Amino acid sequence: MKIHYLLKKLAIPLFLITLFFIFTTFMAELSQGADWQRVFGINLHRILELLDLREENTLATWFSSMIFFATGLAFLLLGWGSSPDFIISHLTRFIFKLTAIGAILLSADEVASIHETVGKSFFRFVSNLWANAPPDNNGYFWVVLFAPFMLGGLLMTVYFLHKVIARMPTKHDWQRQLTYFALLSAFMCLPGVFVFELFEWYFNTLKQGSGILTCFEETFEIIGMYSLFLCATLIAKIVKL
View (cartoon, rainbow, N blue to C red):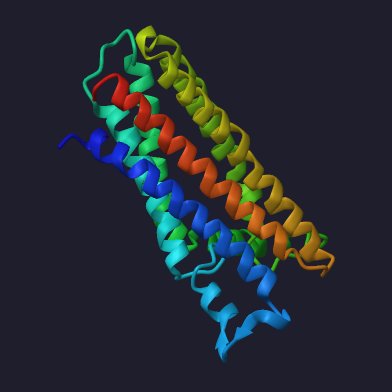
């Protein structure tokens, strides 16, 4: 079985599971301290925490990591697959190879929380040099360190994906439109992760809490990565990789 065929078969189940974990994440936030968090002696909030995208070492975190990994696999097809050069050029393949490696590394980071650990270390380094550095107990400084590179990589990937979609055979017009929609969704959602992260940092600095913002952050992240996965999978299917 070709990998693109397997990824295509996974697209709908992954989408439905993505919606499920988005729902449980918001419910975990809304149930915290609510009167209805216990039903028939069962602590619903504790169960929902196991399905919360914001928590570490949960089913939701594992699934989120799988979305990143599946995105990496889809870009492996685009980067290393044997497609016509007039559709995916050598330079474009190289960019997609970098994207595949980046997505797989982010998959590992999703379960290991490496970026938060690096953010905390970077904060300690900055605070030693700058006495008035913004307070940060949660590793938000990772945004300052990594966001420029990640946004640059995203823009580059989106640009080359757009070029590939424009070159796809015209007989696949409806699939081309769906691929464009997935690409637009990724382009709109993924930068929003950094925006919400900065807002969370701001509200945590003011000690006002940012629970619902973290829900939106995780929603934008997982939908954005799923959209990138879907876009790459559709391209791989159309060009028969």
